[in-house]
Image (cartoon, rainbow, N blue to C red; front, top):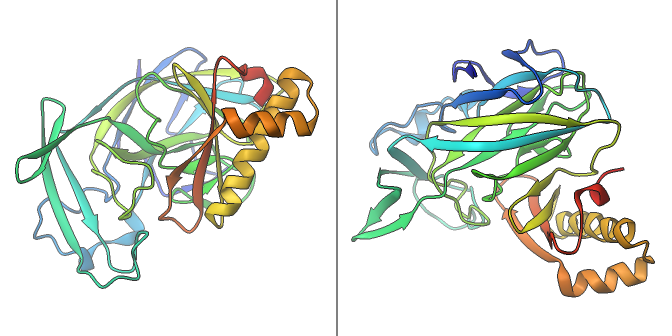
Length: 298
């Protein structure tokens, strides 16, 4: 199994970036990741105003996947995720869904014991380690790792956890995959712009579906598929996700648009991924009993 060190951190998905590792299909890869702050916040007294913002939201990689070509689908299977036993959550003035409120920059460190993080007043919550930033490299230019898009990026989908599979459209040779921004747990929305940010590692396995790809990244869990869309507003993101879901149903059953649109209204759930980045994320969730993966690929 190959290991990619957290020292191989990138801050933009860039087609000209030198790969940190080359891997074969079905080869397992251990990706070690720093936390979203690049290790800059170690205790609650660390000043938020002193952060080097050029070191925020790094992603480990890029990983070059053998035989991946544009218009293929990169399959990323998350075999395991482990976090460190300490995490940090912050508030940053003018950030998050309530950024217009007046509040102070605050950092809170939490201990993670026996898969629970301890917040305050005896309140604890079971962790669900997940990867906030995960994706492939777009065709042109430098795309900051904190940006969402058809390539993935800082999607902050709480279901990107152990046992999930993700399907990304490939835009460049080798796909140039990278991942980071690990969370011990995050709720849908990530309201305050931070979850329980922590360093850790993930074991991944890659595969390819040749000559076809999804319009948006797709995640597969035990029970459902979900289209991971984004937009400048939640309304725009929801429309993109809904359109992709309806398109999949049309292909699955050879239905008319009207038939698929009606069925989606009773069988497809729209859920918010995150509301805190310039682009907002929404996923359209379809039970696996209603649709196959092939219907998301063209």
